[in-house]
Image (cartoon, rainbow, N blue to C red; front, side, top):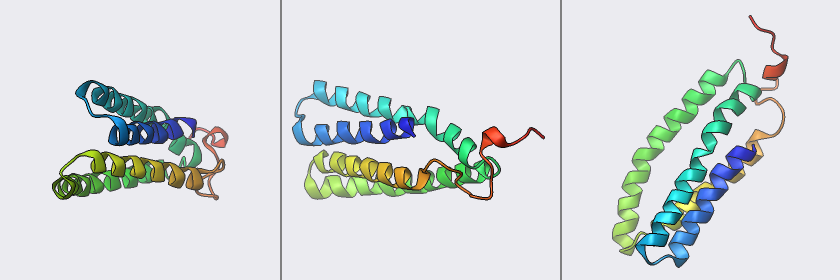
Length: 130
């Protein structure tokens, strides 16, 4: 859960800062590198977390999240162009990205909990090898 929190809140803070305060290329690059670096932290947390909370359903959960991410990537690309055209700047795009990261943090934190994702399943540490 900590890794997922870092991977949601880090990009949110970086993108919000970029949107509100950065006007030159050097600091913009630092903000984008910071956002991508903290986003990459999720790779160490998400897949391991799913294995712990939904050992028998992990493949389905990962498949569902990957499918959702792919579908939303199409929408996100189109919306970036629309927002950029309407506002004439990427500042709003960065702020929307920050808000999306922040909302994903709250959704993950509320849904994840500390117990199994599917109550009928045992945590991975209690599942005996087949």
